[in-house]
Image (cartoon, rainbow, N blue to C red; front, side, top):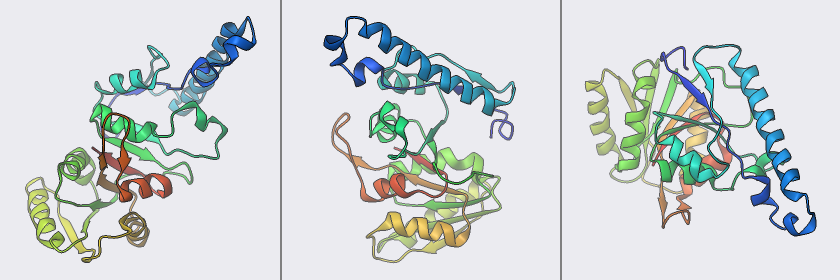
Length: 247
């Protein structure tokens, strides 16, 4: 993607510090702090090794040491990026505990930046050749579509789907807007039933061979106490293709 869009990529590790994960260890061992610091260094070294291997010497990919291990610091650093590239959480991965369970959703909310979220299973060969846009007449959906325009303008196929009684009319308006951006999108009426949208979106994405799903990230609440909307939660848990989300 960096080559395709002539972009620079910064690799930034983010983990909860060992001290945050095991605070009780301070009272159990006198040299606990040194042990915790060594564990943190091992995790950073592992992340750097993976990054260097994946970067394969590309001058567009750069490594940056974090200012702190606090996920909040990662969110602040995200304010200075156009796009975040994140991984889907895999609960069976032993390293999953290195980050809070709500890291991805909280980051989207706190940074306000769009994110391309990559599933932990399968191989991502290409992104954005066949794009499915989940449309809802909200600011979150609008922000996601705006963030996706670089992909939409290059895609071979762009399809817009919406659910609910007023979905078709709003999708036609989006279709007109996209046309002014040089994007020819087709409209698929999902029906008036707006239940289990997450599962239906993933099923439709598989049917049309989509390699990118674009959608808004919805939530209600305050600060980190966000309860994600049903579709957002389902997608983050069961995604089978890269998803571009924006809050």
